[in-house]
Each structure stands twice: as structure tokens, then as C-alpha cells.
Amino acid sequence: MARLAKIPVAFWVFLVAAVYYVALSAKTWSWVFVSSDSGDWLMTSNWFVVPQPYGSPLYVLLMRLLGTFPGDTVIWATILLSCLPSAVTVMLVYLIVKRLTNRHGIASASAAVLLGAAVFLTQSTILEEYALATMLLALSFWFYLKEHRYRAALCWGLGTAVHVFILGAVLFWLIVEWRSYLKPLLLITLPIAGVFYAYILLLMYLDTPRLLAGGLNMYSLQQYLTVTGGAIVGQLSLFEAPKRLLLTSRLLLMSFGLALVPLTRALHKPVTKSTAVALGVVVWTLWYQITCLDPLSWTFITYASPFVAILVGVGLSRLSILHLRYVAASALALVIVNCAFLNANVLTNREPWATNYYEALQQLPDNSVVLCMPGAHSLGLYYAMSEGKNLIPLIFPYIGHGEEDWGFDDYRDWLNRTYGLALDDDFDTLTAVTYLKLQGYEVYFASTPTKQSNVRRCLELGDTEWLQIKRVTGLTGLGPEPYISKVPL
Amino acid sequence: MKNKVVYAVVALLTGLSYLSVRHVIIAQGPTDTHIVVSSLTLNYVLFALLVGALVPTITRKLFPKRFKTMLAPVAVTAGVLLVLTLRALGVEMRF
Image (cartoon, rainbow over the protein chains, first blue to last red):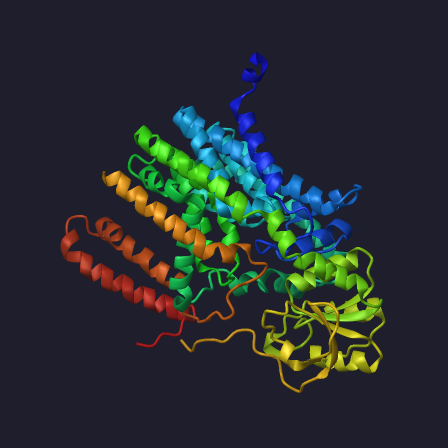
């Protein structure tokens, strides 16, 4: 017993969080909590290939490393790159708040607030990149408090190499601390991030599968960097704003519950520099989420979550113990409720869309063409291909559709070269379908049956035994629906 | 007593939020079927709010002794500059 008492509380905080996250994590490949990007990450565990923008080089390198070990990559990647980093983040919140307030009870309550935070939990129990990047951001804040500037800058560099979003948080950070952190940023952060991102350029230069980016040239680079980011970042229209603000408010309430009350107290004067830095990260994250056109951008609240928990701790230190009790009770209630309602493992087993899709792909005849939209199904298809299944990916609208041509440069050339096809330069996706069927290829269409797809109405579909994959028997003659409908303002 | 009311209201809102937004979180893809796109984005409104918030500071810096009289002219000038900037950025505006 005496030995146990000597173990630091922070370790117990880590252990409890780790057990909690591992227990709730998905044990098979899953799309729950909108983790459809997991197919992309799993592909990078098998192949050297450029992933979705903006590359996440450190994350894909770690995935590639995990892919070389025997065992289930899904489980290992979820535990090592999501559950454990998040448990470390919970521990860091405990340590940071302990250092800021010098009160063990408040530090424990803040850690519990993060443990009960719904959005943070979702990204801690699935195969995604957010947990690792958030851990590095929280670690940089810990080093910042200890005035280890270069270690903090190192964490920024590594965090940016996991997800470029971290660099934006760093820029907000610099508004408060630019005098002492500009040099570490220039000497450590940017070179480290630059070295990792050079890996993505190298992959573009080498003869890797052109599935999400073209070769190394200005046109491909420009497309790679703007095709997603330029279309969604800060692009939410004013008409959608009320709905998005309501969603954000509900997500924050669901995640932090009663802890939002003392959070407001942290913003009262005097506001310290560390509080301003934490607030800067929260503001940056919320700005991104609220103004992003992508309806799935709520996952970015993960980055703000530890900093909200830290601000809650600061606020509690200015309030009576009664507030601490309310907040601790609320956090524990959310921890328990989330076990029942946000259990990734249970939700995945209940609706195993990802594994069902994977199994259906495995049953298709070799050399079949699979037509699908970019997203869960295209990334899942790439994963199945990287596992050795011989399929031809035809992603709508990667080859010519006028203004809606997303055309990753070299995609058509890569298809022709790799599969011995002869897709002409003026073929669009539907012409390619007709051509491939005439050539004797089996063409299948993959999508979620309950959701509308822009290209589905163009296709005559036959029956198959699979829910998400149907045989294409012909074309209806209708054109694809436009991707976006613009309001003329 | 005031604290208890505040916590009770927030607890109620938390419960309602949890029930109403859980389906968005557990979804395996987007739940919105249609999203309105326009060149008039929320960002421009936030930008306008930021400019508005900065007007008193700018006035105080430029006219430290005539703050009250110059506040309105500076606000109007900032507004005009904002509109011109937004138009230069390609935002189509109709009044």
C-alpha cells in the first residue's frame, strides 16, 4: 500500500484514462464518429502513397511503421495513435492545472472534465489523427509553462507534421508570445515540419499510386493544396450560420456540461498570458469549426477540448468549493453516460458498415471496376486494394466533368498505365463507365444505400447480395447532380 | 441560490443537447443532405464585427482628445472601407 502511495497521481490519471479509452475503442475497422478517413490511413499502412490533403506526414509514417508489424493494424493504430495519446493528454491537463492552480482537487476535476468530453472521446476511440496532434499541442503547452521554449517548438513542429491545423493554433499562440517564441518557431518548428512535409513531396515525385494527388509539379501541388482546403475553410455561408452556431453550442454543452459555468470565470481579469494562450487555441479551433463548409468539421473541437478543460481549472480556482463539486459531479456523470451512449466498440458492432463494405469488396471478381464518390467508399476501396485485392478504382468526378472536374493530375494516366486501359482525355466518368463495360469489365457502384449520391441517378443498377455495392447494368441518360447549389448573393 | 439556478439551467441544456446532437456524432457520414453555399460567408460578418470592435481603439489612438465627436465619423469611414475591401475580395453585395 505504501508503495502504491508513492506512485504519482498523474500516473493514475493516465492509467484510468487509458483503460477507459481502450475499453470504449472500436476493435474492428469502423466509420463511427465520421471516421471515414480511416480507410486512407489504413492504406498508408500498406503503401507508400500520398494521402488526403495536407499529407499528415508524421502520422502516415507511423501508420507505415505499424503496418510492418504482425497483428491487426486497426487495433494497434487505434490504441497506440488514439487511445494512449489521449490518455497522455488527460494526464497533461492534470499536470498543467496543478501547476497553474497548485490545487490537486481542481486538477483532478479538470482531468475528469476532459475525460467526459464527448467530442474528445469520439476521436480518442477510433482510428484518426486528431488524438496524437492534440497530445503534442497539450505537451507544448506544458513545456511553455515550464519555459522550455525549444521543447515547446519541437512539439509544435511534430504536431504540425501530424496535422497542419496545429500550425494555425501556433500562430494564434504567437499573438501573445511572439517576442520569446518567434526564434524557436523559425529555428525548430518550421524546419522540422518542413522536413516531414518534404516526405509528401518525395512521394509525389516517386512513382506512387496517383489516388489522391498527382506527380510533383506546380499544377498537382496547387490542386492538392486547394481542392479541399480552398473549398471548405472559412466558406460557410451566412445562411447556414445559425444552424452551425446552434450545433456548436450543443456540442460544447454535450461535451463539457456544467464545466462551462466556471469557464467564464477564467476570462475575468486578471487574464494571465497562459490563459490568453489557451484561449487563443480555443478561439482558433472554434473559428475553424464554425466557418468551415464541411459539416463534419465538428471533430476539430478535439483540439480545443484540453484547453477548455485547463480554462475550467483556472476558473474553478477563483470560485468556491461548491462549484468544484458541481463540476466534478457533472464530469463524472458524463464519463459514465458516454460509456453507454458513445461506446465506439458497441456502435461499430451494431452497424459494421466499414467491415461489411470491406468484405463485399473482397468478394468482387478480380479486375472489376468500382465506381464511387470520394469519401468513405473511395478510401475504403483504396484500403482493400492496398491489402492485395485487384480492383480498378473509378472515382467520380476525378476525371473530367467541366467545372466540377476535381481531376487530380495524372489520375487518368495512372489508371491507364496501371490497368492497361485506354481512357481518352475527353472521357468523363460516365463515358468511362460505358467504355469499360464495352471492353468487358464488370462495373460496380459503391455507396451508402440510405444516402443520396450525385452520380447514382445516372446509373441503372442491378441487384447484388451486398448492401453497399451494386452492379452497374447501364446508364439512365441523366446527368450527375451538381455538387453545390449556390445562392446568388 | 443564483448559482444553483444557473447550474440547473446548464444541466437541463446539457441533457437536451446530448439527446438532440448524439445522432450527429455517432453518424458514419454527413447527416446534412443539403448545405447552402454563397459568396456571402460568415467570415465576412466576423470580419465586420472585428472591425466594429476595433473602431473605439482606432478612434482613441487617432483622436485622443476628441474621442466622442470622432467616434461616429471613424465608424462610418471604417464601414465604407470594409465594404470596399469586401467588394475588392469578390463579395457580391446587393442592398
